[in-house]
Image 1: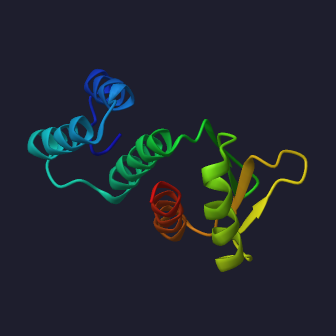
Image 2: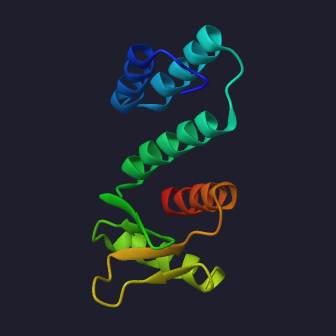
Length: 130
């Protein structure tokens, strides 16, 4: 509200951001926001990072991302090629990652703080993608 005080403009930006279907469009929107409203504050940067993660999740094939009780749940497609990557990630980061015992295609990630969580989520996505 402080960064984009005009409600109509703020909602227009939210709508554009939510409709961004690729990294290039999101980058262009980030540049447009900075040009129009000035230096991007931390909460907006975090929003942009999370939108990037959403696009990366889609690219990896994650079908759903949900957040509750300090945990991020990544619902993965049931694909054999992901199994070794997921198991490798869990063995590397057992304190942060585990499989849901009831739904083995769901990877549960412990969320510590926004900055750490976003960085770790990005690392997880890159490993699943690579």
